Image 1 (cartoon, rainbow, N blue to C red):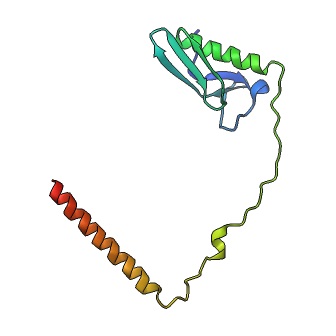
Image 2: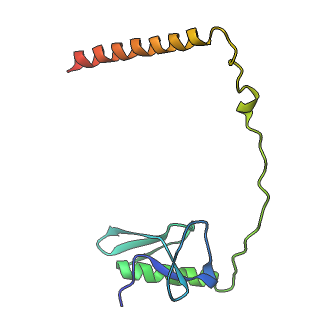
Length: 133
């Protein structure tokens, strides 16, 4: 039986790693695995959504089997728990100066100066490009 590039790992053992997993009808979930051929006889399978789970094999299928065994062995006597932590409320520092220039009588002149500087820079850039071509 061919092993798919996406390993099916039982949800009860591994759960959700912080990335979306694909549900399968059997109740297991698939996790994305990057399989890379390093040389003719060395393949590396790396579980993308859980750091530190990377193994080698002599073929793509062997690397995937080794990865599945490694994950199951790591989780055999462990459980993954989730904590509901409060989100720290941070005030946006930009709000303190928002609207600072709303009533500035020089604002339109300032915007016109910026637009003129951009036009000049674009013209200079066009001239430089013409000299190169």
